Image (cartoon, rainbow, N blue to C red; front, top):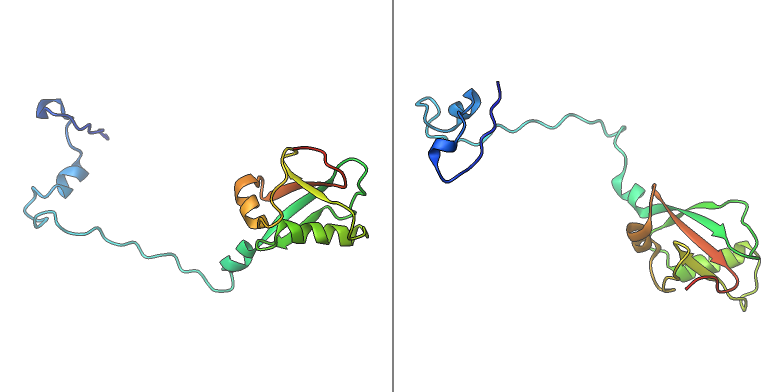
Length: 146
């Protein structure tokens, strides 16, 4: 039977100790004072072939691009891009993909509410506003929100 022990000011209100607690509290002469460190549990062996490269999965994120208004819709809406890419770099990519002129305006919105700064990195936006393993961005030619 397991007992829960609550700490209080009076010793009378304490519940009885379990056998495990009695063995580890240092009152036993075989324990040697209770100053022994707990045994370390060895880590499970993992072969290098099954291990994923952590830095590779963290360098790229999934971005879902959705068109708003009269803006052309991209055939491929889901893209995997590097975290260090800026919003301006993403806007330039969308303009090039949609064959827009460099003089045309492009707006990108997060959560259909605000436009991030052009020098903001996409990785930071993903950490703050990403959900379900992806970052959803809305793009349009004219100002729609915010």
